[in-house]
Length: 390
Image (tube, rainbow, N blue to C red):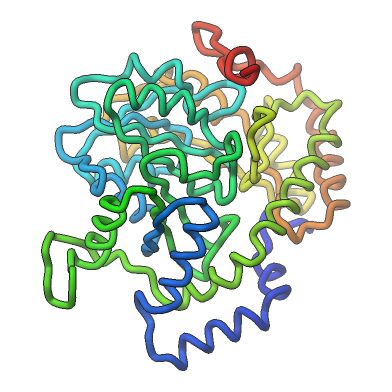
């Protein structure tokens, strides 16, 4: 049996520190926005190499407040991708704005910058790239477009704690960066949690107000706000885990290299990180035809594979009113049909990767051909030919 994720194994390794941190909060009697939150904000800002961090109660709340802090509201449009969890789209709608989807690059599976400018209108207020599976989007190109058009950039870094692009950390390149600390994330709490990071003090101040009912001081509400505060226990847990995140990240990257070597002779495509990117492998995904047959083989073998995400957001019934149809985002749709996620977490013994790939070899024997290459109608392979060489 190889589980897709084993949070119990992680807890067992740091149990004394976690238990002491939780007990410290319980005995203090201070449970919301206290010293643990302040300490975590300072440390996570340093980790992301940003000036400010504001901790909130979920990654969705982080996205929502980042949009509001940036002035996004009713009548505005936000350019984003559909290859993501629905929270990205939901947060845009919460702000009163409308999401406008562009397709992803077929090599990296992240936002294709070559498609952004055609999507910009007089109503466009922001660009919201998603750093999928731990690989950052092409931020230099995205930022250049945003600056030309006077747009705000908000990074959805919910899956990218510690990821890097040309030596810069996820969340530090855009105007704001948003993180989730859901338990299964590379840096996960013991419940819900999130954070907004930024170098701009006015954005940090506005997020501080918005997360706590718009209060500057107790009962002094200067703007309408929300109850999006992080609790002390989650911050205490995160403060412990922050000491280990680099060690865990390198373990993930080592497992990914092991998978890469074991899969090198199989017809399974994978997103290709540029040489200057630090992929942190929140998810290790492979593309193959007859994906569902392979998933059944893995599960029958006791291997906890998964799919992230089988139905793109633009085709979800909940968002049908946005007016998108099958065929509108061909790369996103093909990837969603073809890829599955393999077990990858720091506590997974490297030799178990061989067991996973052994089962995939059986799936490969049933493949009709090598995985079909996915391209835009224009056959644009942006990072592989243009940006990766720069």
